[in-house]
Length: 457
Image 1 (tube, rainbow, N blue to C red):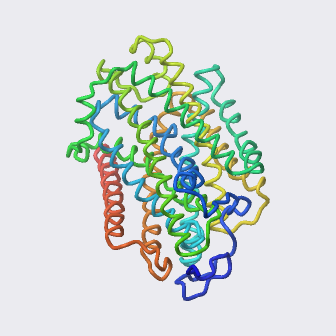
Image 2 (cartoon, one colour):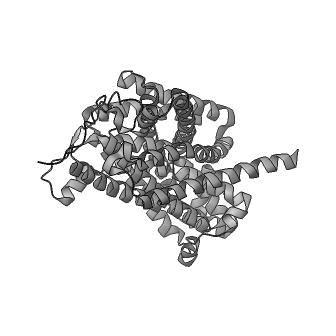
Image 3 (cartoon, helix red, strand yellow):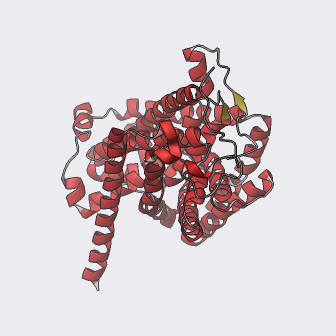
């Protein structure tokens, strides 16, 4: 007889499992365990069954906020910051693997785990910080989509922001017909973005030796405040806090055997899924920076605004299709990110404060929290100011990141909470090193900002 775990259904955990409170309901209950994974499937068919959640997470690693930081980094410093994209992606792979471990082993997403472990004042503080991070992220995604609509159809930014809010109805439609339909749409849009940038790379004809050198980390990245600001923006745009909450939830959409071996197998396949998906994000982010370096830095042009990149690509690359491909990829990327951002907002709201609402109402509220600030920003700042806010939003995300990463490492390293699925010492050590790097870089950024302000005073 297969060895089973203690009951993990919501509300059935024993106090000895190391949690202050018992979990009260499933994460994203309307799609929880809605995708059946038959135990008799072979390796490749089982991998296909588990594939999907990783790609929903990966779109957050290639959203318009990434575009802003990658364009700024590539046009200013050439290929130098490719190493930051590469290392950030490795950090993301590690942290998302911990999310799959937490969600599958405990039946909790990260927000629920925080609620069930910390005192309520800490829970509420973490919830507010996470909501601010989601607003910053959604600001980048919604404005990015609006900018793409403006580039393609000359639609004013404010109207574009409102139009992107309709994604909530698409999510409700697809979720009602099956979570796999939502995953299929996201994967299709990822391939569209990847195809556009593959064509851009061919047109740009980059210096591949320079690209290889750019993958080697340099001390100047940390020593120069300007480089550090962009680098931390890339880190914030790559390793996103809301993705940690989202991933620990959507891995639970699969229905696998509730045994130790069944969960161990689910963790393995879910980790493969997220790792492969994040490598596609690495390609797209790297491609954006490489194209910016080849097209702009080589000509001595510093381009930080998406509109300027769109206007300059065709004349600099000598291909009229370059600008159109750029705008199409931006629209696909932004719309993809708003889809998953809405789901992440739902996970956070339900997980932290256990707010019981109808699914359609939860998603409308979650979308409204992001769209209203974005519309105000678009109306007040217009085209130019919106791009600066894109970059700032990614730095804000990085500053919030430790408040999600540290609890994640804490929970997954606890044998009381995770049982046999607790992270081994080597994994805890590497994850702690990653958290330490994130904290130190954030402190360095804050010191530079305040030191600069005091110098100007």
